[in-house]
Length: 259
Image (cartoon, rainbow, N blue to C red; front, side, top):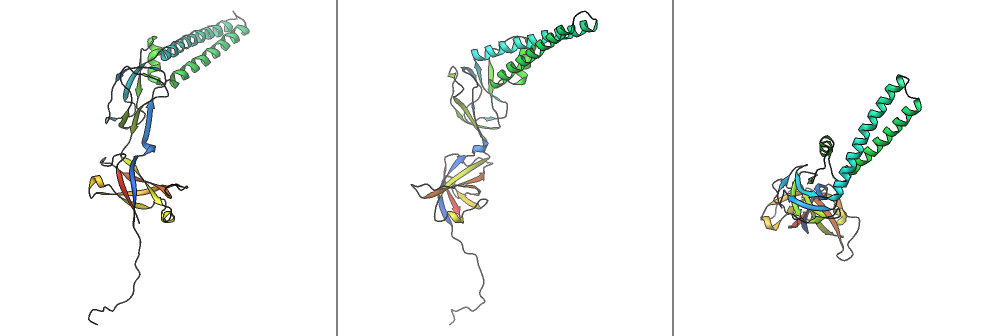
């Protein structure tokens, strides 16, 4: 009787916690794959694996006959546009002085419109080949062909892949660099289908990485797959985890604790 305790009943929350084998992955929304817009030869490199880059930083330098031909077409179109514009202006002055007929003015205006269209097409072609506006201005102002162009980063991040060396001939289909922002990563796990109904978007989970000791991270579920893996009878769950100190490395093994 002395070991019995008398008191009032109360309600408490009871929940199971399951550990799901997981892995750290790069956040694909923070990853860019960078290649060349043209077939050409790499003549210089400016980065190596692990370098931190900003948007617009040079990664490599390339020379290409295709770029040379596009620049020549751009210069021809720019020159023709200038000439036809001057001719159209002279025609309007001569018309005002009643020296030439209206038909001649219309013909020169038509030539100007055609020249402008060709110039716009040549400009668009250079843009598609990766030439930015500043480089186009330099080509037009100096009137000569630039022998090379730089491949630049399109976002802030870290070089996590570099599959090119100096002297290598590359094509537009080749992936040369991968730049990733690792301040946030994904942790992806496979949840047994029996408990998948208790996993919801926005739910917080605890992430433990054996390689980092007793450190734990807070993750938020951002994706629950709509299909079941028929081989493992599991459903993929993806969480996003802050990684400001870059402790979490892609492909690390982790454990996802889901309450």
